Image (tube, rainbow, N blue to C red; front, top):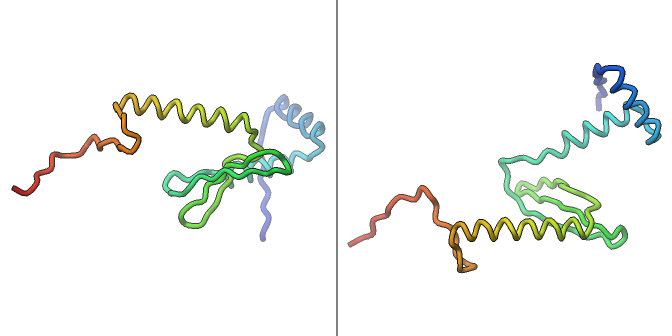
Amino acid sequence: MEQVTVSSKMDRELYSKLKRYCEKENITASQLIKNLIENTVSNLVPINKSGMNRITYSNRADSFAWIIHFDDGETITVGEDLTPKFLENLSEEIESVLATRNSYLKKTNKESIPAPTNLKKMKGEK
């Protein structure tokens, strides 16, 4: 695979912060920039694909991972090393906003679905 170089100009104060951070983390600026670019570009979640959310548990690390398995076979990791508290909070928030939506829709039956807002009157056979 061919390697290319990427560079960026920044003011001296930002460069000093970058340098201190890299020294503290014991990495080079190039390693940090490469990791940031890989993590940003590789982890973009497409908005025009369908798939299934999956949560996996690692008993060795006592943490969870949130993964999306897309219908086309692609898999992305949304989050790793998630704590139980994070998932509990996320679950509570999801339940809360769904309850708010159900209240707005006046949904009382768990199995009912909202009618599309742009559904036109349909005529049945006489």
